[in-house]
Image (cartoon, rainbow over all chains, first blue to last red; front, side, top):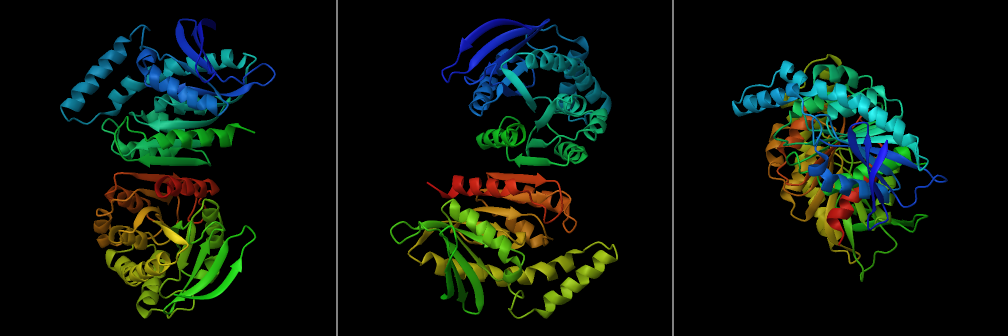
Length: 246
Length: 246
């Protein structure tokens, strides 16, 4: 991991850009973090495109830092300045066509759209975890928050260092991810926008049902994909504080 | 309204038993409530049987009082020492038989089970509201919390003095109540126990969908009917503080 930029935000949070191999990322650490008082970490997911998502990600990270957590995020494969994937571009075009034609979105298309992304992203986030947890100012435990729910689900299933996750049910989910959801046992908070135009509500409810966790909570709110109410940010912070602090 | 008992709890909350006509009830007011500083009110719903429910109701009322709310509850028709209803007793026996035989619970039975209760209880709670709001130490606004969801739904639909409600999706809902749910416009927090043995999950999701409110949130948690997690009490308190305070 190589730090490429560093600046101090007005609330004392240290924001550092980094690259991990070819993958750019951002790390935010609260003022209080130090080698003698390392802080727990939240991995901040997103749909891809760090530059475009920066204002929302930085807002979430500031909020998180105020609760005493470090926060980190990585660019997704095929997004931002990273090399595009012909397979994913084709799948996105096919999805657009299917939605415009009012056709059902079949499992084969969902697999093509989501699985290559999951298969590439998950090892990258795990490698980032190796690097981040080796920093003296970051301890553990680790939470994962938001982003593409299939990435979050596989990470929660395969990465034992992740202790709690807030997942956003906002995208298509391949069949194989439902199977992996049954292997997830960490506490979960799942957010669902009830009238999300690009999301299948029943699929989201089925996925919530599939998770193997003994503590799982679904928060559904009215409104579309980007309409998650402000108070859910507070609810997520309380969820992580309950599970990752003390 | 006639007060029949009065005692001070250890946290300073004043607990008073009362009767309203033939209907017994309990009122809890925080230490801070006075004619010069009247407090908002939460109506505390329950499934019937004040004596049996007292420990849980008093626990909720103490929590509510710590947030600066008064809390009040009424015995339900046919419960506790109130005259039993032959119609309701018959419907309960029919329900037990249907569930034991693994038969579907039809709309006619749900109507017989729930509607007479709703039709009797709702005017009683509205009369209690008249009496409670005439006390100098109680101001407004008013919230409604928990209990039989059909009673809460009709109250929210017909009683303009109720400004926000936390509803517990834990019992059968007559078709007519779904229609009334569309008339509800106040902010709602709906709690659902995902594996509630006595509740139809799909019916609960359909009812959540039916509410006409622009702000409505569903919190679903794992576990059975009585397994609502402790942190949902805090979430309900925050919901009421957001909508009824300041």
